[in-house]
Image (tube, rainbow, N blue to C red):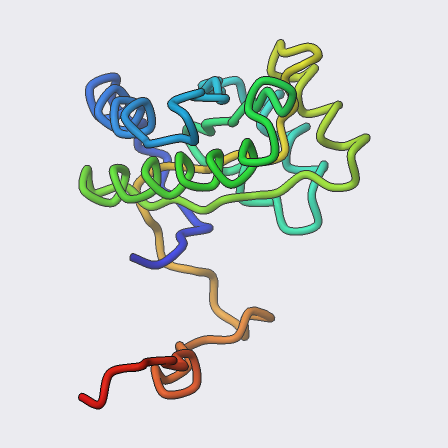
Length: 166
């Protein structure tokens, strides 16, 4: 599954979105706290404003739908943002299974996360640090991407520590 930052104008159906949100709902969380809420953003104006709140959030403006993750860090404890990342990954995998492309965006600094929360109708203790664009993938525009392509080989990523002689 690759991130999709370019989308066609074809809408995401309610059933496709329901399936994606169900996958997010069933994400595991520390002590089953479920410290997230999902805000579906179809409003073009709100998507455009959200796209200006992160250095790499431009794709939010052009996606047919955005799912913002509101996180209650107070109730979720130190695990809240980790659990939100788990939910985001589940949402993105479910989108992929529906034939949709997706890409996460992060809102930093904290003032941007607070602004994103207000745009999504959430107030303290909820904070929106992440939103996911979703839609039918479209080809990237011609030109060279600033984002490196390819993956590091497994040999560069894995170290093993073992007591076993095997």
